[in-house]
Image 1: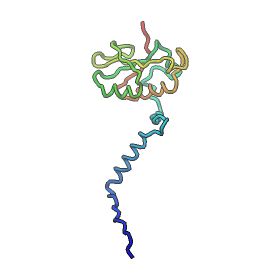
Image 2: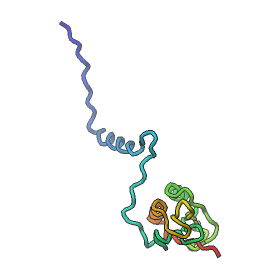
Image 3: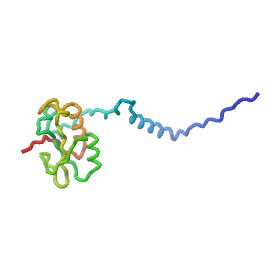
Image 4: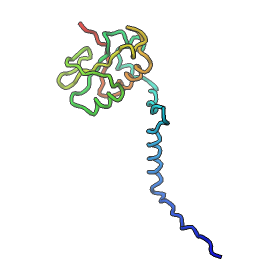
Length: 149
């Protein structure tokens, strides 16, 4: 009586296992079920309030934005900040943030209806979280309210 003998099984090398696990873990964070958005970054445990010239409660007490400086020409850094806050806009002056022109460029983070609970009121949690993330960047010395004269 003849039996079908299955081909021998190949066992993967254990050297590849850590790389496979790392790849699987990395890809798992990129996939969202249909109809759901990808997961948000984990909330910050603390906000570097020394870099912020306002609190969440007073974050919209300004002329429509808060501002900060970034090194001029550092497109990778600007791209990282735009990942956090896509609505930032570049300015051309030193601003209230006191950018060192031409080595630094002024950027504005808008504080409109989507970012504020009320005109000249508090920042919504999502806007506060974005500003806290920007403030954690070592290149950002301060984030201050915008006041036009």
